[in-house]
Image (cartoon, rainbow, N blue to C red; front, side, top):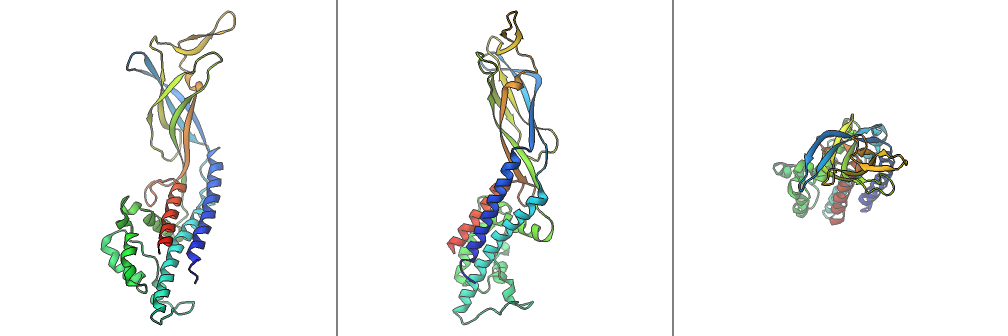
Length: 301
């Protein structure tokens, strides 16, 4: 087996990730509706004036096609996991060759220790010794310390179960043995942009006062609230009435009008299900993080 095989697996996963990114981008443009409604209450503003509050809602118009995307996610996960296993195999074969030992030809007989060789992924330090002994028995013992540094319990930026290798291993097991990975639409309010009410009329000013953490969109879901800032004299620079000459006159804005002049800036995404193994993480961010980790390991060894 050529040493380039693991990199070929990563390169193939890259193509799948790019294809999935294009599908998600197209989905983002049509998968939701957003509206804002007045909250019918006001808060005092520091320095005078008052603020009208708008609640911003989002709802999914369709759900991500898990039956279409699930197999693609599975192919990405399998390619990255098998790249690691091929690293373990190559290192084992190379080390045993220095001792004059070669693996049996394919198919390797059931029960043969060569069938157990795989890249070890360990979430708890207590299991490391036995896992190394069962999965990497044929590799150079001098590699053990380097391989331990890759382990989720050792690498340490996140809880072990949320480290990229742990997420990869569980995504792989789920896809192989249980079901396709389900994904959901998520949406996050980043900002509220004012739009021009009418020529010659200054923009209505908005500011975000709360944001809801991204989560699955099932029905209409509050994603945040924005405050419509009034001038200290209590007026808004927006028209509400037409004078005798047909021109719009500035005045107090009607409660149904402000949302017409606001444009929510949104982060629309597709995420894994809540809870383990990916804990509602963005599909593309999660897969790219795993891919980066796998590439770093392959390059290092």
